[in-house]
Image 1: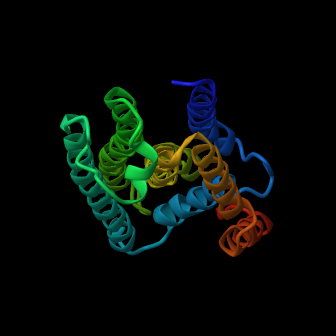
Image 2 (image 1 turned 30 degrees about the vertical axis):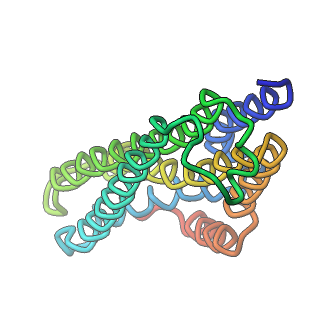
Amino acid sequence: MDILNIAAISYFVVVWIAIEPLMAIGWPRPHDSLLIDMVRIRAAWMREVLTRDNNFIGDAAILGHTINSASFFGSANLIVIVGMSSALFMEPNYGLDSGLIARFTAQDPLWFFQCKVLLIIATLLRGLSDFIWAVRQINYCLAAIGASPSREEDRDITAWTNALTLVLNPALRSFSVGVRSYYFTVAAAFWFLGPIPLIVATTCSVGLLIWRQTWSDTAKGVTTIRKLLDSCGPKA
């Protein structure tokens, strides 16, 4: 493996590992980041769960839909992982006699080709792990909501809101991390075209993620909702 490939894979791994902690603190705009704003919105949601009089049916349906989505993505990841794993056992010619990938990988040794496949599998495995963990956490959240006291019982709304939010936020954060792993799966696939395409694809993936989380219309809308919640203040 030459220096350029080592630099490309090192850049990919560093960005892949660093992006989630940075986004979790709201980088590059900590006061107007979609991830930070959603923490506040989920807290308001949990307060509504405790104060509205509908037996949690609508909230359970929303979380149930999220469980189904995470299960679907997890199943899709598993299928792709199994398919990609078969490439690890190809003959040295990889079964590619023509086409775009064959043009760029024809001179690669088998172990180098397998490294490229393993990188894609690694990104998919991370996503699969996050989706599985999201499903488990959302189940815990459903149990926590079901166990919360009714309006007729003596309760501390603020304490219960904080407790439910502490369970909900990691669950939905895990789901989001799993979805974002697809961006890096796509970037990893560009390594088949060479180290420069890998660097470019990684940079573009991160740029797209940051834009969608910070400056997209959805991010601006979520920020507006968060500001409205802040201006209203918590309900008694």
